[in-house]
Amino acid sequence: MHGPTFLSAALLAATAFLSTPTLAALTDCQKSMVQQLTNTFENSQTHFAFDYCQDIKDGRGFTCGIVGFTTSTRDAFDVVSTYSKDPGYSQEFEPYLGKLLELNSTQSDSAEGLSGFCDAWYTAASNPAFRAVQVAKADALYYTPAQKIADNLGLTLAISRGQLYDAAIQMGIESDPDSMPSIVNRTAKPEGMAEETWISNFMKERQRTLCNPSTPATQAAWCASVTRVESYTHLLETGQTNFTETFKPLNNDGKEFTINCNLDVWTQYIPGKRYGEEGGSGGLSTGAVAAIAVVLALLVLVGAFFVHRRIRHGTWRPFGKRSMVIV
Image (tube, rainbow, N blue to C red; front, side, top):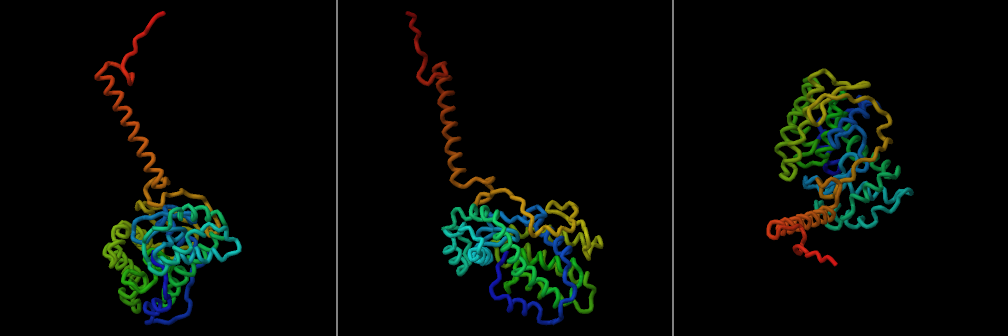
């Protein structure tokens, strides 16, 4: 996910053609459903993954927390920096504040100097103060700006507002060519057409961008995530456009499932898997994986030695047969 820099410029660029007051803000129930669906896309679960942290190799460093804050796009730094000033701060990130500040300036995806960062994030997630910061930052950095763009576009359907939020989470709200506001700008203005037609056009442009981004490092991960668009397209095609208490989108496997209103989604914490920082190691660190590999190699060598002794000397004993002396 991209992190915001100067939001006002990006938002003005995306919405200059309309200026309207708030029209149809999502209810808390609708918001909970929209965010549960994005949670499903992000982590294959409807509840927030407060403790998630992993390098998913998308060119953005570590991806962390409930909406995929990243170490190379400023928002992970924003979360940690804000938490470090909270009275409930438990000092988990003290070794990393300087490096995160550096990455905040360079936008590098480097993990150098961040060894153990994911363990710190996982530990901090058990602190309600840290979880509250994540929820507040997700709203301030992504949800609220996405809803302002929806207001200025004159969008009233929950499906439209939810799709803009999900695009903001995945693609950011800056002014780069792959961002949600840029996709809005490339989609014909909604005047004179049904809102359902406009959001369909937006989703087609988003899907095109996912598989043809301007940043090559994101192409593989993004193109594999087109279910985020296909799920909303399914909702549109089945007439599920104005979410109430429940709806049936598609999950990451393309299968229909049910999401219900859940007003506890912002405070509910269900501890998840502790991922390895390099990803794909089943929660083991790189050092642990290397150590296991060495042990297995040694076991193979020892086994080969005994087999060799058996074939050559007719014995499993490492030093041949011993003569038995009967006294």
